[in-house]
Image (tube, rainbow, N blue to C red; front, side):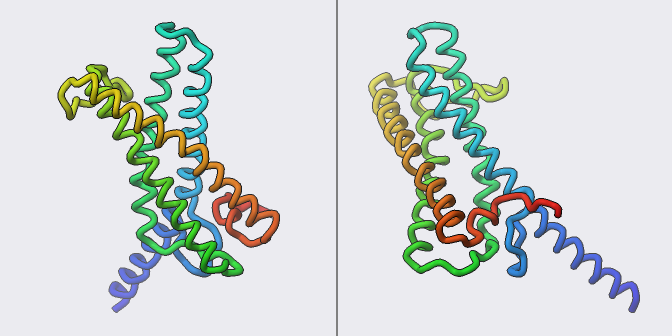
Length: 204
């Protein structure tokens, strides 16, 4: 009897610890778990790195070592975003801490659409880059590993992929800006806990 109770208690504690570490899934909790918060801000840093490399690259002469180094970092940051986004998607399978007070339905709908677009950006853009490099007969290294080419060499196809990669990548400026503006709007104007859910709780 005591052994059965101990097992049940142990499973409950383990389950609660997993929820707290991964995504904080108790409706009484108003913040995400530490892993979710860390991933969120880490991916923001990676996004800054991705776009900073693109912007700085424009000031470097074509064919220069510095330009090539920047594009190497650009690909590394983008591939890292692609790898991490699947962990974040896994976390979204569970309920999230509620927004208090509850926002209007139209705000919730816009937030869902924005999140959907951001996740599409994080998945589609790196895939297009991978295909673009493969079609252009260029390697796609990631931490010393060379990702195999999924398509045959085709310079014309590579140009088309580059166009779509850059076009979709450009929308990222607007999507990230909209996402950030919404968080600040909720924090300073609405004064709900939308942004606070993604901040580490400070010890008082």
